[in-house]
Image (cartoon, rainbow, N blue to C red; front, side, top):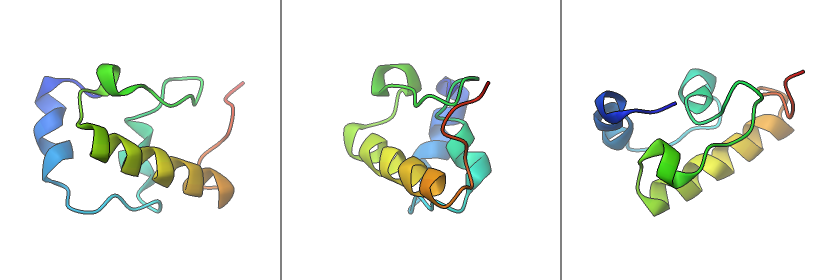
Length: 68
């Protein structure tokens, strides 16, 4: 989960890359579900970029769809 201390690092990243799996894991819960914008605390446009990157990473098998 992204908290206030991590938001600054998240906001300074210029481009959300689907290959940056460690960064994308911050936006998923332990069951590999995407966290909402209110939970992550990022802006709406950045949340859309993150959601699209997570979907691309799942398609390329870099992130799991479900964690058992």
